[in-house]
Image 1 (cartoon, rainbow, N blue to C red):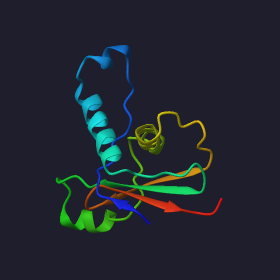
Image 2: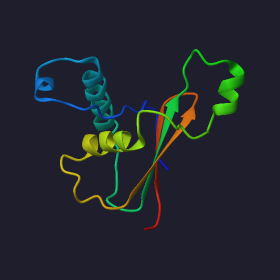
Image 3: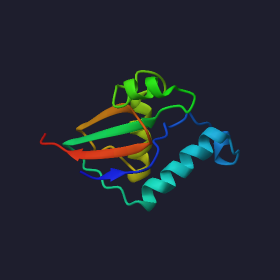
Image 4: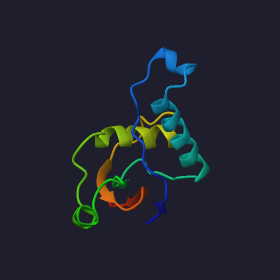
Length: 119
């Protein structure tokens, strides 16, 4: 089960202007894609479970951090935007991917965990 210590970034909504403008959200996304490619993340077209560990905010108390560690991340950004980001970073064309499950959880540090499951 490969685990990558890369903080997940959701794919932002982009416009034509983003080809040359350097909005912070788009630059974070591009840096994330570069990290994914550099780490040579491998994804399969089927039987895949990707878990995104979202780091907890520094402003949270120790008590809240202990309570929320490993719990579902039920706020924005949406899990499908994380999925789009990693699929687009790994594949130029991801239309052949047909069976993928995405999960997002709270954690101490950002990670991406990839598990192979039987379809």
